[in-house]
Each structure stands twice: as structure tokens, then as C-alpha cells.
Amino acid sequence: MGVALRKSSQQHPNPPASDMQLPKPFLGALGGAFITLQLLFLANMCYLYSTTYHDSIRYSSMKLLFVDYDQDVIGQSVMTAYDQMKGPSFPTVQRHPITEDPTEQDVRNAVCKEAARVYNNSQALTYIWNGAKYSAYAQSVYSMLVQLVQGTGGVYDQMNGTTILSTANVSDPYIAKTVLGPISSSSIDLQPMAQGVRFYYNTVSMVMPILQQFFFLMALNGISAQFKIFSSLSLKENIALRLIISICYTFIASLCMSGYIWEFREDWSATSDQFGLTWIAIWLVMHLNFLIIDAATAFIPMQFMSFFMLTWIILNVSSSIGPFELSPGFYRLGYVFPAHELYEILLQIWTDGCNPHLYRALPILWSEWVVALGLSFLGMRKRTKPVAPVQVTSQAAKEDMV
Image (cartoon, rainbow, N blue to C red; front, side, top):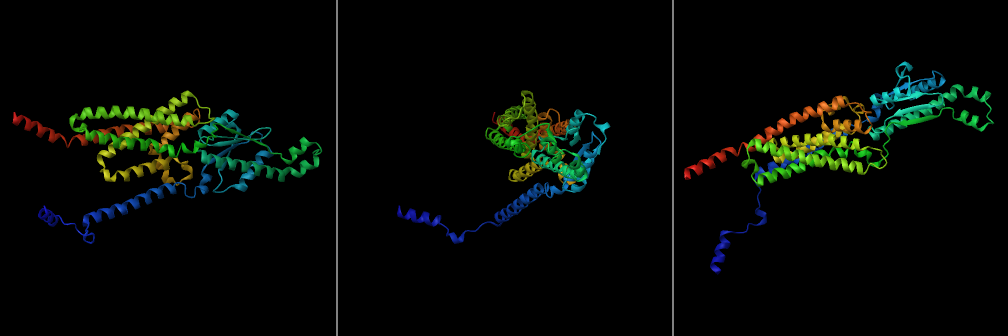
């Protein structure tokens, strides 16, 4: 027993810690991953941050259309106040004739088409805007509208204050109030959204349709490999099975996402029809992401999937985080990403048609879905192709044995 122990000890010596040597290929691969991941995060975050870099000096690219219904000194005061505030950090006021928007309903329709509009009635300045569209930026524009109204009051006082004070009966409290504050205003928000989670709709919520598909596909591919689904079924059967699974999974996942949006909507008066349309829109984008990631996992080696996933998430979020008017022109490429088009469709649903961009969003999403479906089929063909020779060889061996 003692001899055997000594002999075993000689055959399997324990190397001292100081003699540990790592193969050079390992260090090279580790160094490559170290550097490339740093560059990956640096590039993606620079792209994301630059979408809003100096966005405050691009507010002039946003249009504020002004319609003067009274054609009097108040309209002149508005334009004079705007001339004082005009600059890169203030929206551009465009004065339109009454003939283009003769009624308040015309102004409301114009707001739904593009921008906020201010119109003048016999009592006050009234500004109509859509608070549901990019809520964080909408609040900034709203504050600028308030500044314009306040500036208009100051200009009006300078132009007419002395004349009014010399003729008005300031002993009357109502007249005195009018003299001291001659320019009143009212605000019409076409789709108020006061819930705290409104800032998540075009940010964090745009990540979920991507991450859910990635995590599920990792599990699906692992389970399929474990049970040899790729080799035991034909190409057509694999494609049909995966298509059925993808539709079922995204159907339920989109229902869950629509559910938690509705559960935390607070006092937002949304209808059941809007819920159903929201569900359909989210399902389409989820299934599109499923097909894209499914194809990516087939063609991209697993060790590089993190590169693809991080980049895909950042590109999508950056396309929906804010209006393109406040970003450099290069970022208009965000029109091709599903997150941007999903948010455009959701705004159309949630505002009762007050974001008419379906003519662009739906064709983009459906065309991308068709392309992604084809790539997913090619990916499944790649998964099943390597195991085909093995199946043939095994079948031939069985025949030889017989």
C-alpha cells in the first residue's frame, strides 16, 4: 500500500503554483475580448449620448404655427415677443393666414398632423398641443409656450399700457385686473398623459420586446439541441415548429406587455379598442424581433452574440427616445428600426389618430418582417444542414449491419 502511494505520487505530482503557465492563445483571445468589449460599449454609448447632445440648441427646428384670428394688436404683440425670444433654443413661430385654418377644429387637425399651433380668439391666447408625443420633450415645448404668452403680455403693456391706464376706470377691481393682466391664455392638451410611467413608453419599454425574444431563443435553442430536434425533424418540420412556437410566445408576451402598460395607466382614459390595437402592434414588433434574433443566433457565433444584442438594443432605443428634429440629421436612419415605428403606431392608437404616420410605420415593419422571415428560414437551414450527413451515414451503417 505504501509503495503504491509513493508511486502514484510520482506519477501525478502537484505542480507548484509558481510553475503555472497559461497558453499564449488564451491570453491573446482574452486580450482581444477585453479590448473589443471596451470599444463596443464605448461606440454604442457614444451613439446613444450623441442623439441628444446639444439638443437644446435645435429647438428652432420645431415649428410653432401661429394663426391670428383677430388681426389686432395682440397678434402684433405675439410676433414682437417671438422676435425677442427667437434663437436656436426656441421653436420657430410661423404665422399663417386665417384662410388656412379658419376654425378651431382646423387648428386641432393641424396639431395632429405636425406641430403645436397658437390661435387668437376674442378673449385670450389659446395654444393647442399634444402632450402624449415624447412626453419629456412635450413638457419643454409647453414651458416655452408659456414663456411666449408671458412675453406677449409684457410687449402688450409696453405698446398699450400707458393709453389703457389713462382711460380705464382702475377703481373697478375687474377692470383693474384686466389692465394689470391684459393677456390671458388657455391650454388645450389633445391627449393629456400625467401618469409617471409615461416616460417609460418610448425608453425602457422599447427594450423589452428585444430582450424577451433573446432570452427565450437562448432557452429554445438549448432545449432543441438537448433533445436533438434539429436532427430528428426535417427542415420543413423544424421551420413549421419554430414558426408556431414564435407566434404563440410573442402572442402571450405582447399581451403581458400591453397588460402592464394598461395596469399602470392611472387616470389615462384609454378604451378596450385601444388595448386590442396596442396588443396587435406590440405583437408585430415582438415577432419581428424574434425572427431577427433567431436568424442572428444561426449565423453569428455565440461568443459574439453580445456584440449584436447590445448594438441592436442601443440602435432601437436611440431611435425612439426623442424627436428626430432635435438630433443631427444622421440619426434619421432611426426610421428603419422597429422601436421607432412601434412608438409611432402606439401614439397613433393612444391619441385617437393624432399621429398620422401609419403610412410610413406599417410598410417599414411589414417589409422588415418579410425579410426577417426569410433570414430565419435560412438560419434554420443552416442549423439542420450539418447534421444531414451524419443521419445518412448512420442509416447506411444500419443497412450494412442488416
